[in-house]
Image (cartoon, rainbow, N blue to C red; front, side, top):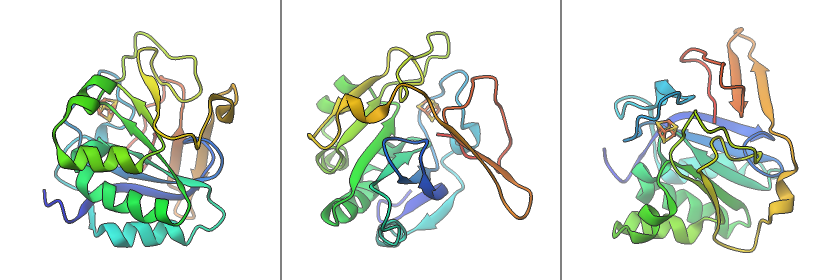
Length: 197
Ligand code: SF4
């Protein structure tokens, strides 16, 4: 996988179910982890997805002037950290907040010598970090399982920004395809046309 390009699994220009306020959400293709009960099994193989230049992804996001920020999910965003850092730096420079959902935990992220990891950490405001463990559901609106943690990397967001309830969005396209996004109940398992974060 080239670092110059992103392998994009899905993109949602406007969502209120993947972080605070209105956000543009990017799901990347490929994850090195295999958490039991992962909501996005179609996004786990590294093969596949749409290949897009980081500048183009940033341009998509910058056209959404009402969106407060962007969220990166997957798949595993840090598996494409260099290219995503490029996107994050561009949208951050334009004033948008950056939230990353990652399966890596705080110790793994902070101890990594991968320069892409460091760039993405520097360009992000908030991380939801740690592998998903379906046997210990989380209570916080952004934590799918209880051993995940919020890493506030800047002062842009605070705990009060998240409300108290999880949000799930259902969208029906003209083609009839249903898109599920956010934090659906763990019993939801849909097909390749649906994106969940
Ligand atoms: S880290 Fe996230 S995307 Fe990867 S297997 Fe675990 S739940 Fe799925």
